[in-house]
Image (cartoon, rainbow, N blue to C red; front, side, top):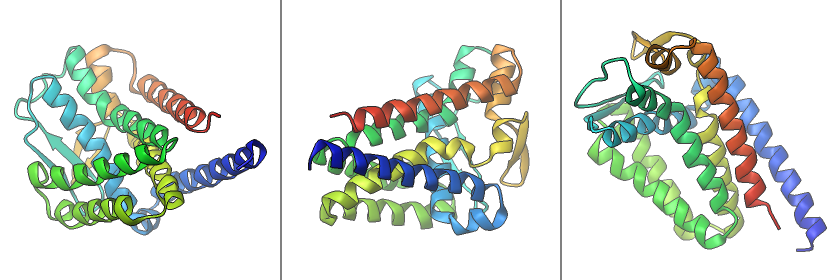
Length: 238
């Protein structure tokens, strides 16, 4: 493919993915939209809660279990709860929105190489299956996550190169925008999780590091947009 045709293809791909991302964010703000995007809704929750869980393990708190509820909300429970103050608590809280964006950026970057794309799809599919066995303790997670993981692994093994490239970029974008699935939750002190009111991630960061929750919501959003820009710039670089 010539450089001009490649540039045109990249622009079209970016426009399509940006359109899907914007539509997803808007639809997620409605009950009907969350239902229409249900597999992506559950995947977004998995990305988010795994970010918390892995950070909790790295902070020495352990990762006890992951619950994903039928309404698309979820929670990652650690063996030792946070005390609500300190840098470690802020990092664990921030890893819910930031962790998936980092993972999503790496997925997008992997699309630069066919081999890396297949490997990334395989790793993601296996991670979905393994996390279900190790941490997931809810019916919704047991039903949806293995189906998603199996489909992604099959795509890595049997899918065409073009399909693999598009899906890995789509999944990368979905991971990055998962923080905006509940836009009001990111820019609020708390919200409903499994029918119970809980402190939001940005509210927990504000408790640990001061400054208001909306400041951290804006900072996280800016960082995610920067990660998206960088990852696609790298993936489409000549």
